[in-house]
Length: 185
Image (cartoon, rainbow, N blue to C red):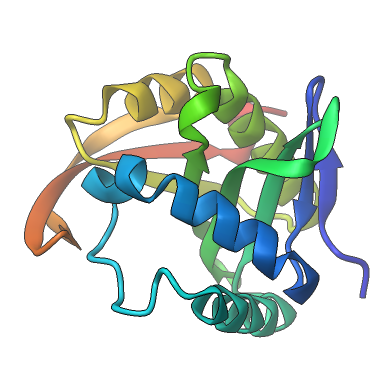
């Protein structure tokens, strides 16, 4: 099976494998405090490299089943250091052909347009290669940078999802956005 891969003007988006466990660990832990306001409570073993290795094993298993695609985002000028991640999860085929989008950008790479660029490139990949009809994203309203990135990527606001996800022990409302395949063709 060929691993998902795509590029944009400045980025390489490639599937993560077990060989990327250390890089994923470094990316997530160096940004842990930055990601914390937007993340579920971290498991007690989150700061152990083995947690991330096991997580990648689960990701690979889910990818093989067609349930998700997760990319690490790398600058073309520095293809060994992960600066972001983007995941298309809960892929449902049949008449639905939809998934959820999640993404993160390294705290040291903000305000450079990388999140929007990765979202656009990843979305095009999912529409073309996976034949999806719809990609959905849900964002905490106070996460202004994420709202800007998703809107710049062409997603349309559909409404609010009340108490949608448990973030750090609190059920948070989320803004619901969608991108349809027909909108980028």
